[in-house]
Length: 121
Image 1 (tube, rainbow, N blue to C red):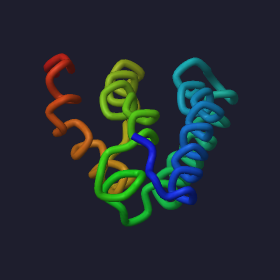
Image 2: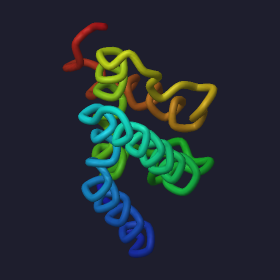
Image 3: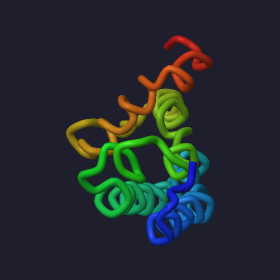
Image 4: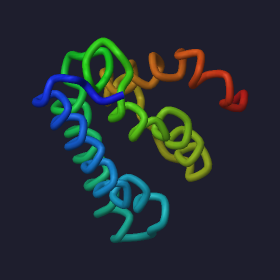
């Protein structure tokens, strides 16, 4: 799941660490109210923008053409973010706002080993 190229392997590890460090920002939005939620919303948008622009860029998956460790780190976004957004009554990761991240989610969910255990929605 990690690339053989040392530079690409380091990038994959960076994005895994980024995911671990920033998960609170992505989840914090759902656990706050009032002014804290406004702040958490802004931070969530910033983190998703970083993921889309710098993590994914123009690649099919975070590591390129194949699914890798970083994709698995952010795999919860493919199902969990939609569910939480629906429960909270807010927008999730939509194609209009985050087109590349939205497309990645669709590709990720279409991988048979990912798709099979996910519950129907």
